[in-house]
Image 1 (cartoon, rainbow, N blue to C red):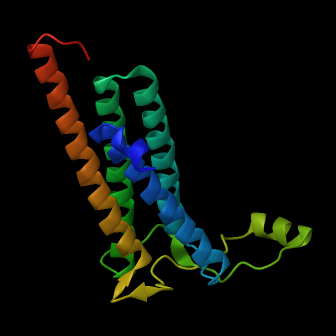
Image 2 (cartoon, one colour):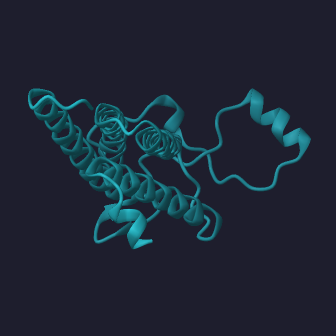
Length: 184
């Protein structure tokens, strides 16, 4: 395992870390739902979508960087990951603000109770009625006064800074290589 990691460029290591962290966040979110019984609100599900996108971008970036051996491609991949994490940070920031009642959540976040086993009649009735999910300002779990959305904000912002820094560093390496006459 160490041999594999040591063979990666800085950008590839950052992409591998981003992939791993997003995968862990998604696993924890799904475990909290399945094991702890925490029902995600609409904004929680939106934040999960951002991490699914980050997984795809990081995986595609790793594959492309390995296949084409292009520093410019690696810079583009970590730059794309930075954009995804910027969106993830924004979603988490918005959700955290809703939880602290700094601003109202979207109309779909009004809540409606927990979701349990459904029959065909329940599904049919649900399609005609409001969404049955908890309110977005209802904090179901927190640790040290920070909710899951708050932790997602901190982690996503950190990943945004890391991937953006890697994109700038890789772009600088490409420029320096071109100035010195080597191709990337």
